[in-house]
Length: 372
Image (cartoon, rainbow, N blue to C red; front, side, top):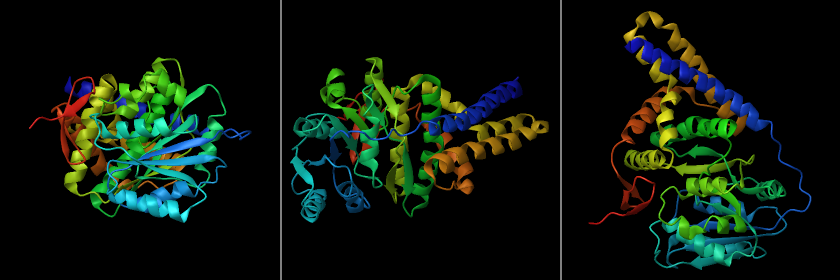
């Protein structure tokens, strides 16, 4: 009976790998429309401290060739080291419309949401691009976003990302997981049920769409404010898409402790944001399920070969076809083991660590500072 159950789970996992390949082709079949009259854009960048490569990340936005855009940056205090970098870039690019917003201490549990709320209040344009500090973009990024928003049916777009690791082994493993498993899940969800979510590193939205879902005041108590932003927009009948423009997510050289804290935060947040989808992540581990099948029924060893082939093909589809980065197959098995371990850990515990602070996570995805 155990062998039959394991085989059934593995069969579902192999089907999932095939769906990833199909979903990748489906995603690539959509084209970025030609620009007729590009909409002006306000870029919102919440900052806190200096991430690895921050100056280059921010400079990539100053160097955009879109004809009409502004840049807004938010820090909690004027003495934040990120503010020094922003001021230097503003001086280096005097022709750019760029401003620094000092927010003060956030009254919201989610400090990032408060920063975005403050910047939206000052943004001059209807189309907003909300991007994290560790994001780097190619020339033409804003033009592509403006082209997608030429379609009046599009209210929100979430950008897939290519994770770029630092020098640490742990960041390399995490980047490989992002570039394979995480992106694969986005693509399959898009193909099967449509885009009913958003992912945090870079989201574009119309101001009126944010206002229609209750604004950032409605998102202030959520840890995964990006996901619920897209969820609320889709529930309101707005057009949410997975953008065809890829951004770079520079995750830096995380040590083991930082990687564990980040993965646990991600797992516990995801379980509360998408509880049914979180259970379904069991099928995203074909190699481990194949090993389980072989452990209980050694004569079924060909299942391991099939799992390896389809796992490699799915990883190739996301990394090579979409992200244009070679997959590092030697990391896959180790990353799969880690992903599975953190998936299990996500079922337990209700606290997370975020930027050095401890928070209590509620079952519905809301969170609050943990009382001492």
